Length: 167
Image (cartoon, rainbow, N blue to C red; front, side):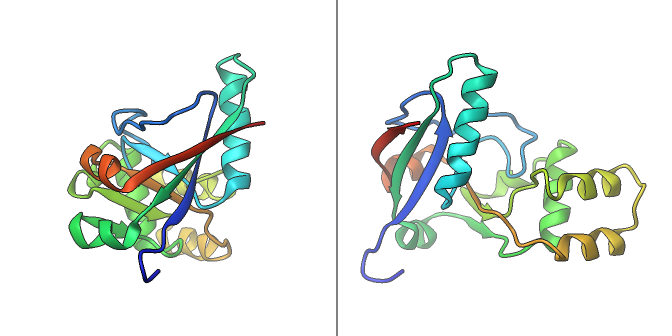
């Protein structure tokens, strides 16, 4: 991404969010408490439908943002997991066990511990699967995508609201 190129990110929910907050969410999510986005519009749409259903608002929306990742990486603490591997798995497990490994970072990018891989993570977490077996199973999957923003200053400076799509 050279020349000031912006990354388009999506956030699925049931409300228009012009000013995202990093205080949203729960501590034990994959990458901690923060504002989660994705490069994948389809994934954001699926999540928006789920949130709208769970909240009984039935108004799924996808918020769109531009993100200046190049500038953010040079100024803030960034962690990237390009694949489902041991580092990713250890981080996810630590997060879900409440160890808060994400506190050292301002934003984190990587795969989602979604329906395709969560069973493997749980089996490993509960001691029902060896680490090597879990890693082999994870290697069979192409990671989905999420980017968690954990620092409000970063969000305010480099994440720009573009608009909202109502589904």
